[in-house]
Length: 386
Ligand SMILES: *Cc1c(COP(=O)(O)O)cnc(C)c1O
Image (tube, rainbow, N blue to C red; front, side):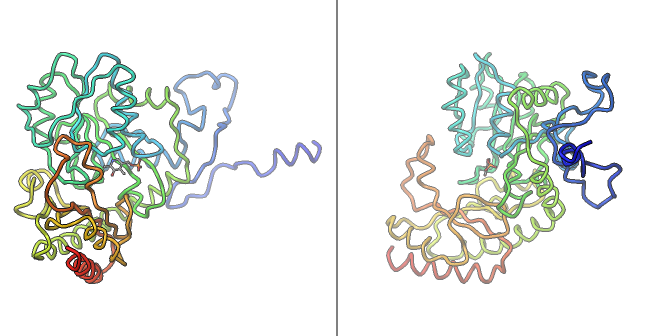
């Protein structure tokens, strides 16, 4: 062979690979097949890298164990997982019931895309119980979408009750389980059909990788999700899958710390005169505490509270005074974050709130004493303008 050809064929993959603790990061679109018969032997072995190689399959196996699922499919973002799961089970003429407190980009997809493809979208209040929700269902209702707790205002839904009632009517249920990270609540054990999470948040844990997962148990849904990924063409990179696996190793340890620090900060805030109402499902007296106590094994670092009624200038002063907390929309990483939620609430049926600003905090892995000192300064700034 000439040097030109040798440059192309030298340094290619060797087998077997040395055995490391984590899976190899196999970068590959092309998969080399052993012989002509294998080229079109459907199901015999993987024939193309988009289906995911070693790192992706190690991740789906680990996530299936976490979610108590039969199968997990991966998507390049949490939002893609939510939209991918809905596209996989809905068709023109169906109706989907979506909780009014849904993650706003999911709502945008429902209004902009599902409606365009002939799916009827109906929003329902998160306070509706199973019976009230069933009274909204008609013959075309195919899917009920839950998000519990709502990631801005933290209403809890009776997911087991809703799933049982829906099953009796042959209606599927899907939950955005990002808050629980697959760890604190196991939707499939409670009868929910489809558990979705933005791995971008707690599983990734470092605010630097996007990915989403869909976990299912039922055989027909396993096929529907596989087909959905195949038809639309989602793929995730082995490097990103590896980062998610790395995040999984410390998920439980990080989550315990997020939970402990967040409850500590939330209890401190609850005692402050500037704070009107706490919204942390794990705190007794907060909305949804009964459901949380019944169904969840812990809490994460994300909660919200309302300040006493005051001007928008005072709210901005509170946020601008924060130095340890960053101002940013994401959560689940090692760092603490804050946002005001009101502009995002206006699309909701009850979005025209008259009370004080709703502030959401993500409590990261810092020392909670430093976070409380930061919040003390921010409340001082708020008070000077309230
Ligand atoms: C962030 C988030 C998503 C979307 O995840 P991306 O990976 O950012 O697309 C979905 N649901 C909830 C509740 C989220 O917070």
